[in-house]
Image (cartoon, rainbow, N blue to C red; front, side, top):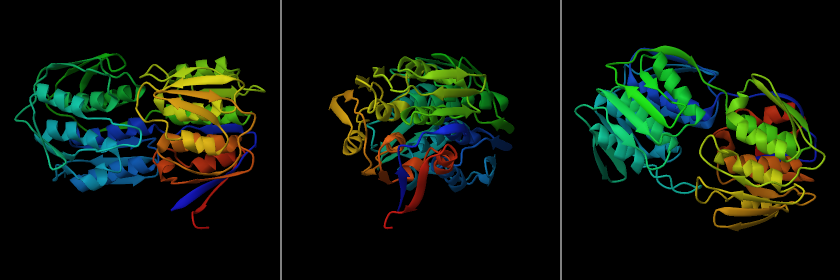
Length: 419
């Protein structure tokens, strides 16, 4: 096991390039199962979750040839239709193979994802949608067993706008006979990226950037070349890193329009923000002003930036209120921030953050991917040295984070936890 050690109180300045979006790459990789031929995917982030998805595809029998940020996948050789527990337990997004396997092969066996550190995220909405399309579903011995003699397009009204549920149903509907309409669909940009990739392969998907998505089923999909969109959450993390250190940071190769809610909040707390077509530059104020934040599904403020914003508000001038409306139990980073001197009180979904003049370095432990990013940002702002353990969470979604932070002037290094 390794740890990351950060010496704080260094102003970050310079430029950093956003990697490809993990949350777009995962469904795109899963969707290669929908048809044969070579799929060449570029701008693939080199993170643990992507490696796990590629391992799952290989286990199913696909040919997966990766070279850096590019991968060529051919699923003509798929033989297995089962995603086992040992893989699914490490990454909930493994459930995304359910829709493609069911649509193309008529059968899928996928382990139930089980518990999650940031609260329950049941797959019942996925399964209800598959049933409407004509699948039979059996839950037994911890596995989802899905079967169909042929999916047929239907109208599906989602109770809540689930991201992975929307993606799974889009993929299944691509090969269903007739028209499928998904109402109250999630509108995250990563869903539109998946739809764009599938359309490149011969699918017919309309409205993926809206709450009403229409899919005209086709008989088959072919191979294609595609470039994954930039990661808006990584982009936001580095912008907030510039803020907590009083710095001047520019993130390039990003899509500013995907971060309107964050940019609005950063301006509200005193930042100077400059946008181009593919970059965002942040100049931090002398003192960050307190503000209130509520997380919502896109285009609202992203829950995946909540922990990072909390780290920033911990050193703001005044009292901030953060309300988490997307996931239960997504405040596991609070006790660790408190160890660093943050003044935070949690009451249900609401966290009151009283800004303090200074955080101090401490030994802390990451509980999930975005919590680990929040701790990194707090460490960058803190006086002294902070040691963060369980950094494998960080590796799930951030490519070369130590190198990128060092390039901005941070003192950060990785070492064995026993050192």
